[in-house]
Amino acid sequence: MRSDFQERVEKAVKSIRTKTQAKPKVGLILGSGLSGISDQLDGIEIPYSDIDGFPEPTVAGHKGILKIGEETVTLAGRFHFYEGWTMDEVVLPTALLHGLGVETLIVTNAAGAVNKAFAPGNIVLLKDHINLMGTNPLIGPNDAKMGPRFPDMTYPYDRELRDMVKRIAPSLLSKPEDLKEGVYAAFTGPSYETPAEIKMCRIIGADMVGMSTVPEVITANRLGMKVIGISCATNMAAGILDQPLNHEEVVETGRKVQNDMVKLIMGIVQELNI
Ligand SMILES: O=P(O)(O)O[C@@H]1C[C@H](O)[C@@H](CO)O1
Ligand code: HPA
Image (cartoon, rainbow, N blue to C red):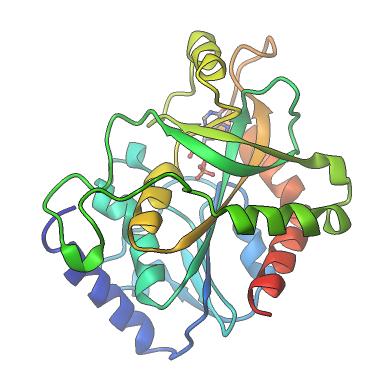
């Protein structure tokens, strides 16, 4: 992180504060094809172009709108490392949520299923992750105000919150068996993985593979936020089926799963706000 990162976060928080004083405790970052989830949540919409220092997403399925209400603040659109953003930019939304007072981060993504027992359309609650991005958002000078130099990552996805999600999910999902639990491995992308890389992922214990989330979760842990991670399995990872992968399919499957994701997320938000 650059030494002016905190300043950048404060400027972004200030832009939001000119429009609302709401202090929701739950923040959401929405993955590819999942932007529509924010339509179901209350709040005012602020385009990223109105947030000081915020870039514009360049990837299809990422709208670039922040929606903030009394219960939730949602970022429909994330910044990926492969778009050419710096790691500071990749984790700026996470730090902004923290700056707005968020205590629990729900991070969602579209991802490929490495675990052959999973299927496209499954909703996968993350229990851990493997960072294969070859970098870390915390590299750089350490600002002690933002957290420790060496943050603990033993419980990256909060255990009690995972138990809560598993308790409420069966009554919320159209097919309760669609909920799985697993480990997410992150590459930088933007090329999808090769079949050999997916075989390696399976050997090292990954169930899902994607190109995001891990920098956000590292940053959230460092800032002391609790994290719930949810992947939408949009496709079987490379080489499992004898067919190529494409982003259109990813976005399309994400959209199909949105209804169930909305129900699950509304249920989680309700539990968190009790
Ligand atoms: O933002 P997420 O992680 O949901 O997006 C996934 C990873 C790539 O950005 C893209 C590949 O299809 O979807
Ligand atoms: O198979 C995948 N690999 C990496 N990222 C992804 N995002 C959706 N599907 C995938």
